[in-house]
Image 1: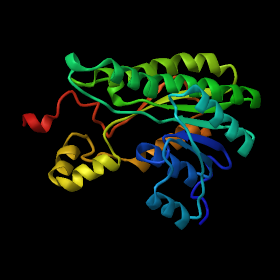
Image 2: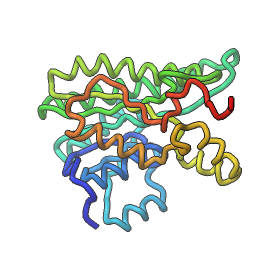
Image 3: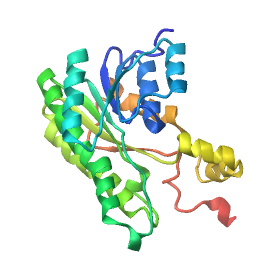
Length: 262
């Protein structure tokens, strides 16, 4: 099967955490847009996802990567250069969602969230940017969350890491813009990842509950999110850098759910 678009034709894109969840949406959408994708993840693609790639004659390069480790990141970038000679795009998607009672939240979990969600974005971007500067430019998409703008009890450290990503993105856009590198944040909301899909299957009433939270009466699929990522990686967004794109089906836009009050 031929590629569906040419927005990223022959571009080399690294997707961290690209084997599952939102990362799978970025991987699949980038492939459909014509990119050569390097999946940087602790886990390889599952058999069912590999079957999808095989069905459409897509292939990815998988590099086992721990984004909390600077040496692992350096090895990833060296392998990417060896495979393709360049890196045109980076999607900093890998991350954890861990919540808990604020007063009981332990320091080990705080450090784990910081290293995986925030520190990794700094290290990945810094290491990949060296390659992008040498080749004359590139695009970085940092995946944050709508929790960067509005959050809830027990999400304190998760929200802090996602808000930090957005703040870092704004500064990075100025540090790297002079080198032809654009940097933007993508802030998803509730998305039908594998765990969410399993929850809905186990309790079908959740589908209606989740839908009702959103202005469109639906919530994101991973591929819908991936399509926004393709836009940000492509020349279609050439005028955009240092900003946040919220992709949450209107969840953040509602002060309250008016249906509850009616």
